[in-house]
Length: 426
Ligand code: HAM
View 1: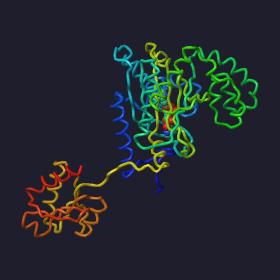
View 2: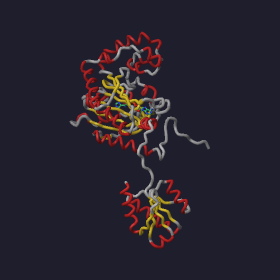
View 3: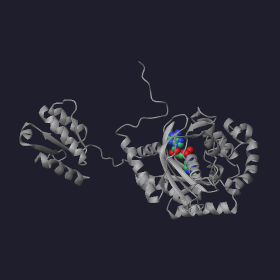
View 4: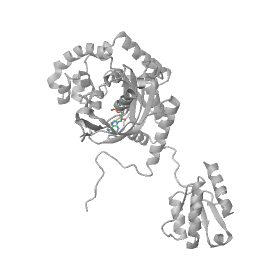
């Protein structure tokens, strides 16, 4: 029989690794608590139209990367979410959160996203994004707060050498003014640009500046910068964001070519990069989306957010050799010498578990020596041995593995003695 394999671009997160995920996820949630972002959980699939309208028809995500299926009961199609912002904003609108005086609405999410991309290091077809969105405020301070939240997560986990790439992609009006000049430049080199860029020039010329193709980069080196076309207000916003970042001691680098691959961005756009992580170096991306709430049917509310994938975060930690403080192992393995002791040990393990102790026993009829080996494999901090004499005396021998220290304890006192020791050690 041929074996069925895992789909390309996905991964099993196995015991031994999943603990790293738990640690990072707990850190992200804890930071959100401190920053006052509340969790929102939206569906893993949404109407395809949400992403067409939200993310944009001309983006790679919508053009090439969505997993969509026809909705069997109606004419519309459904799509596995390729990103979180559109769903969060849909929910913000649908639940009329824009009508609440409690603004900005600060939300975070942690869950799988799906993109049909070419898999490589740090690029998967299913990946987990941690993202945050602050909707309902135009204050540049919140732009810096959002960037700061991502940076603090990386810092608290122990990553170093990160850089924030910062740009302003302006308002719709700023871009309209820039577009004319940009088009004049791009049309001059049109035939030499890559196919993707040629098809993008008329639909979304700014994206041409974001092309990774070296030839396109050279050809557009002197293209007019959006930063020269910002209105006074947009420029002031950008200056204020930079100022707040400096106040938070977060270094940034202005990159006028940073466009981002999603169409909803206005004003602030940013990415957080690490020197080199495999083929992909961007750890996190985000920006403002001041028109999106209105585009999806709500009042005209501004918003800003970011998303980062846990996969790339873990890859970055690995690259930098950062060890997360993961403590594994169970508290106590109960070893029995004779089959007669089995039932008593079985009950004891249940009582230990009820008392908060992580406890285990043998289920493979192992000999005593093999049971001790199994206790070792499970990194048990203690072993409790019930031998023939202990069975006769109603006692248990407790051994602390690290010190080798042993004591004989009466069975009826054993639970409370061990529970206290375990609690103390925790
Ligand atoms: P994005 O740049 O498409 O933005 O993705 C954000 C982050 O998700 C990336 O920086 C990367 O860490 C991770 N990511 C994206 N694709 C993959 C992949 N195939 N495999 C592994 N990781 C990946 C967004 O998704 C926006 N929704 C961010 C945002 C939130 N903007 C405003 N609010």
